[in-house]
Length: 219
Image 1 (cartoon, rainbow, N blue to C red):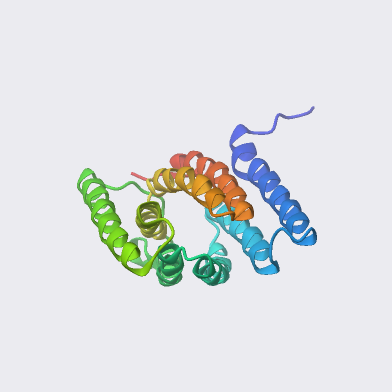
Image 2 (cartoon, rainbow, N blue to C red; image 1 turned 45 degrees about the horizontal axis):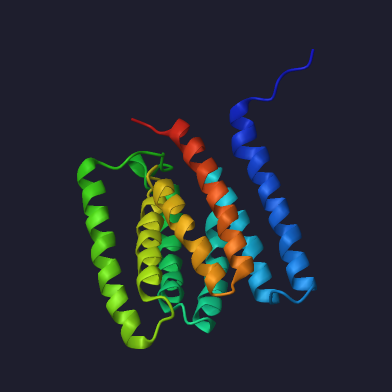
């Protein structure tokens, strides 16, 4: 007798896998036709795979993530998206911290479980994003950034999202979704079309992550 594939498995395995495979095909085509450098194509693929691993709560997202942020730090610096370039350095540190926390951040140094943030932390996170955006905008205007407000806003949202992700907080996906919705048009205007497409894939994967982690939340 044939059995129907569970919807949860389709959402967390097959749909993300299809997105990742499509990403690989697009990256190869963009590189082969000269529309993207080898570095951007490689970062494009590693970024998609990394998010897929996060959706699946795989610890292997961290070593791949370290390589990915190093590549994008250079790419964003070249395009004068200085906040995003600096953000990759912070991502590198948070990836190291998240690697440790996912392994030993639970009760009695056990594996960390998915949980939710409190209302107090939610308010503090929102205030932190607002304050960070204003500060980064001021700095980016001084150094000649190409998109001071939007660059500062997305950097601030992403930093908060990465910190929550490192602690396996469900709300990290809400922030990733918000950031991706801004990143896509931002990168299109900077002619980083392949990276814009990557963030569109990220948007789909973040939605999958929200659905998958919501089912894994512990009280």
